[in-house]
Length: 519
Image (tube, rainbow, N blue to C red; front, side):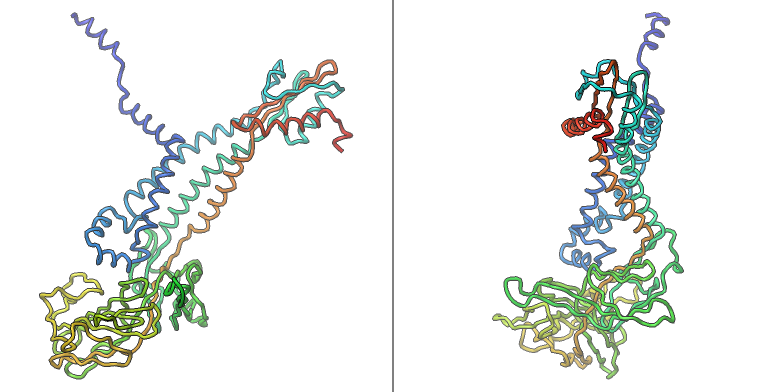
C-alpha cells in the first residue's frame, strides 16, 4: 500500500471525541433533567442512614453504645462515615453534583422560557376542523370582538386577516422553572447555613447550668465562618427534670413525656425567665435553638479516701444500657483520692427488685425504688494524665488498676445501695456513699441562618409544582368568513385533552352568545 493510500485511509477513519468532546459530553449528561432527577433521588436516599443510624452530632451517647455493644459494626459504620452522614465526603459529593446539575438545567430553560414569552401565538391554521377540538356557528362575530372576548378570558391574543389566535397557560412553565429555582434555593440555603451556622451537644444534670461558650460544649461543630465571638451570650440552669411513664397495661413503662425546667438568661445582665423545655419545642434565643433530645439518670456519689478527705462529690451521668427500664451503667473516677486514685464500675437500677436467682434488676424506668450495684472497685493509675483520650464511660486498662477485694462477702452479686447508704471499701481504701438521684438531659444547640430561607424556598417549590401540575398550556383559534365562525383548539399538555374539552365548549359558548349572555 502506497503512502498516499495510507494517508487517505487515515483521513477516512472517524476522529475521536478528544478532550473537548468528552468534557462537552460530561457536561451535557450532568445537566440533563434525567441526571438531575437521579441525583435528587440519591440525595434523598443518602439521607436515610442519617435517620436510621445514630449521629455523633445529635446522639453521641447512642454512638458510644453502638461501640460498646458491637465494636466491629461500629468500626464499619465509622469507616463509611455513617455516624456523620451529613458531613461525610460522599454526601457532600452528591450535594455538589446536584447543585451543579440544577444550575445547568435552569440556565438553558430560563433562556427558552424568555423566548417563549416574547413569541406571539401562531397564526390560525387553514382548516380548524382538523384540530382535536373544533366547532362552527353562524353569527355576526367580528375579529375584533372575538379578540376582546378571548382577552376577557385571560388569553394572550394575536389577530390577522380574518383570524384570531389565542394562547394561555404560560404559568405552567413558570411553575416548572420556579420549582427548579426553588430547589436550587434550598441547596444554597443549606450551604449558607453550613458556612455561617454551628451546632453542638451538651449534657446537663439537674442543678447544673450551661453558658453558650465553646468551652462549655461536649461536642462543637462550627461552620468555616464561625468564631467564638459568633455565639449568642445566653445561659440557663436546669432546676428540675420530670418524666412520666405508662404505669399499667401492656405498654407499662413506655415513656409518655418529659420536660426540663430552666432558668434562662437571654443576655448578660438580663433578668432570668422560666422556660419549660420539651421535645420538639425548642428554646430559641436570637435565632439559636436548643433542642431536648434525650435524658437519663445521674446518681450523686460522695467518695471519701483512706485519709478521710472527700475526694469526689457530684452527679455522675450514666449511660443507658437497657432502654425499656433505663438500667444504666455508671463509671466513677476519683483521681484525687489518697494515697492512690480510685475507680468504680456500677449499675443504676431506677426501680430495683430482687430476682429468684439472687440477682437484681429494674422493673420500671421511673425512679420508684432506686438502687446502685457496685460491680467493682479499683485502685491504681486511671490513665487520665497519659495524654491519650479515654471515654468517661470506661476505666483504665486492667493492667493499670488493681481490683479491690469483694465488696460483699459471700455473694456473687452485691446488693444495691439505696440513697443515703454508704459502702466501706476493702483494705481501708475509703468509703462510697450513694447520696441521691438526679437526672441528666442531652441537648442539641444549633444556629442555622439558612433555616428561614430554606423554608421559604421549600414553600415556593411546593406552590410551583402545584402550578406545573394543575395548569394546562392550550391554544384557541377563530376564523371569521361570510357570517360563519370556525373555532378550533388544542392543548399542548399531554394527558389533559379530556379536561380541555369542557373548557373549549365554554369558550365556544362565550364567543357565540354575545354580550347579552356574558352579562
